[in-house]
Amino acid sequence: MAPLTATELLGMAISRPLTQDDLDPIYLPVLFTRVLARRDTQGMLEITAPSYELQFDLSGGNAALTKAEHAKLERAFDLPRADWKLSGTCDLSRDSEFYPLARVALTGLRRTIRTLRADELKDAFGERLDLAPQIRADRLALPKRLGLGRRELRFVDQYLDGSMSAKTAADSGGLGASSVLQLLALLDLYNVLDWDVVVAAEQDAAHPKGLATTAAKLKRANHFEVLQVHWSASERDLETSFERRLAEFAADSLDGKQTPDVCAEIRSRIEQAYDVLRDPARRVAYRNEVYDSVDFEAARDLAATRSAALAMRGDAIEARKDELAAAELARSIRPKGPKRPSATTPRSEPEGNDEDG
Image (cartoon, rainbow, N blue to C red; front, side, top):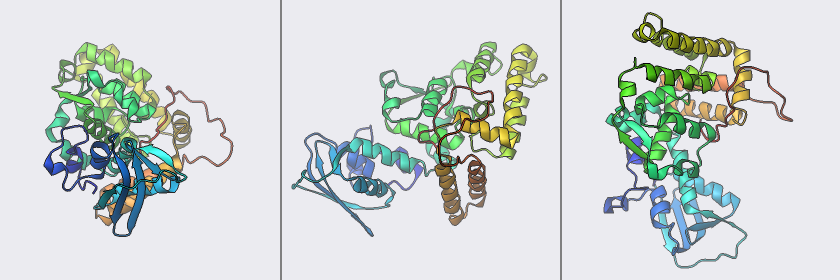
């Protein structure tokens, strides 16, 4: 079965020790990762649910699947409940490919996590949002092995160093709060993170060294990251964030009075970013250039689907946000055919959005 809430998802036994409660009922990612992915597992697995049935062979922790069966197996992670049975028969002579079950489970988890909203994940994380997440020293290589995209890996490198709370990271990383919380959920499930109290640099926002670090990060960040907005942000969201960011480092603020030169530098970077993104044509050109590997058509469709689902749930405010995001992303859908060079604008290192929404 699939987890029904964010709290259930964060509690899954992907890395922690299994208990009897984890086995009955058992979530599909746990079944694949902790039970069937062993090297000595062999047989035919049958998954059944109303209007769903799939059979495939297992051997050494790998699933023998055709491409069509693999796509159908990924849809099993959306089932609220399913039955499974492993028989002793195994026929590996079919025209199929081997897919590691642990990798299938990871793909299914990411698919499930993307359906969770920011408010659901905030409730699930609870007080941990005030703690500072940091990549464990013995897990430094794991984020890449989890298939994170370049933007996600950059976020991990820049923001998950124990210097800021999860709440601050969600507001500062440029991925968008939902995407950051979804990323933290994935990393937490695989026991990649240590959670500790926030170091003094964030507790004392006026610390000159902390502001100098902020200024240095903003030089490397792209315009969306500087304004702390997702790349699907509407014009209203851009304007609101621009005004908020300027107020943070205003000349008459505490930081502005104590470190005027650094704050002036930060304000200049914020104004530069907004000057590009406030204009619809320049915003589209810049977004297409910086996020040149993003499938904006797929992102538009995802936002539209999510908007319709939220509307059916009666969440009109969130549904409207996704509707606006879909309309904004539609502007960046590239025409079919050979890729044409985009307009030249100030930019940071281009990044893909391999899987983030």
